[in-house]
Structure formats: C-alpha cells, structure tokens
Length: 292
Image 1 (cartoon, rainbow, N blue to C red):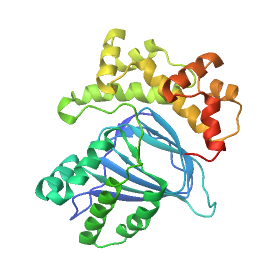
Image 2: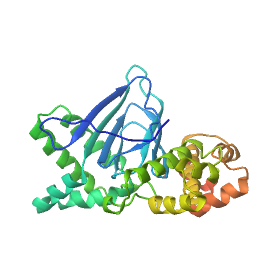
Image 3: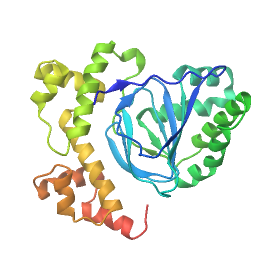
Image 4: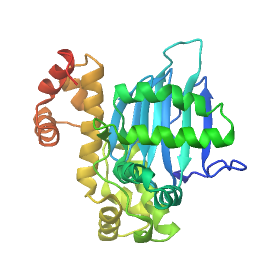
C-alpha cells in the first residue's frame, strides 16, 4: 500500500470541495494527506481512526476536523445498521479559504482560530456534534450559496466547542516550512510503514531503507516533520491503540499490551502511565464507571 497525496474532487462554481461517501464493504485503511483542512462526519459505522500519532475508536456521529498535511485514515470494523452502508460526509477547504474569509470579514475570526486549533486534529464533543449533524446533512442537499453559508455556520458552531479534544500530539510544519515533494514522499513512506507495523515491531534500518537515507538522515528528517523522535511516535501509537482497546473491550490488560507491541507488561504499564497520567487499569475504570 503506497502513501499518497490525495487529489480532492473539484466542484464547479464552488470555493471548497465535498464528498458523500457510502461504502458497503467498509472504510479502508488508506494512509494519506492533503494540503486542505478536512471536516468529516461519520455515521452508521464503528472502527478506529488514525490521525497523526493518534489512534482512537470512532462510532456513529463522530465529527473531526483535520489540519493541512496531517496524515490520517479510518478503518471500519462494523456497520451499526447492517442494512445500511458506512456513511461519511466529508468537507475540504484550503488555508487560503480560511484566510480570505476571516481577513475580509472580522465576524468570521473564530473560523481562523478554529483552524489553528485543528492543526493536530480536533474531535468534537458529542453534544456539539449532535447539534451540528443536521446542519451538515442539510448542506449536502442545499443550493451552492446556501451550502456555503451552512458550512460557515457549522464552523462557527464548532469554534464554540470548548470540550473539543486535540487528537495528535504532533502536527506537520506550516507550508512555508516544508521541503519539496521528494521529502514529503520519504516521510510518507516511513509513516505508512510505522502505522502498519507498529504492533509487530519497528526496525530503524528498515525505515532508513524506505526513506533512502542514512540512519542519522532518517532521524533528522523524522524529527523535522513529526516534531518528535521515532521511538516516542511509536510509543504514542501503541498507547493510543491500547486506550481504544481498554475503553471498548473487555480484553485482559496483558493481552492488550501484547497486541499493541509490548513484550513486557511492566514496560507497557510504565509508558502508559507516563503518557496518560494513570495506569491502564485506572484508565479502564473511568469508562466502567461511566465518566468521560
């Protein structure tokens, strides 16, 4: 599977793009990025989402905003209603679109603030996502001018969500800090391999081979783009996967540790607590007791 720079659909007479995606077979793991912001509402589907170094569970009504060039994908597990397809409503808009909107109209400054917060991905609270959902569905059926106004209204509502959660611990550099396409393709090959194999083990010599760089060149490139080391990035992926399993299943903690790539339960417990501020058992107890 090759990483790719996704080419978005061009919509005639529109300043932004959208897609009504319905899949019977499920949302596939397609690790990709693009220079636009992406707002995605997922319905009738359960599975995992991968956004930067974040791994988390998603369900019906999941609503996320992803910043430019932040690698991401979804991988569905099941349909909630087996008679209906997995359904994703996807909206894309550029950084320039946000700048023009907020620069020309002071009333829309909150949209620019939301965009800055979304650089590392934002997952919106269930309450706000529920209130926004009918507006998102309505804009896909509206006429062009009304569709634009509905999108702006949705973004303004999302900007008021103080409970929105940052997803990735790292974010890509801004466009003017980035190197050429060859450099982007190198880091994409490395990230795809890490996201595909983090539970089975990551060898740095294999990553250097994929990047066509020396080991020292690989580490410099990775830290520049991911803003962290390879080992820390892999640790965050493993712990993120463990969080999804702890909150969404009754699997034994030792089994989860092994499934996400830890040979030592003690090491898993230590790294989990370092990132989450609590043990895996305490993290699971929060969900068992019905707390966020």
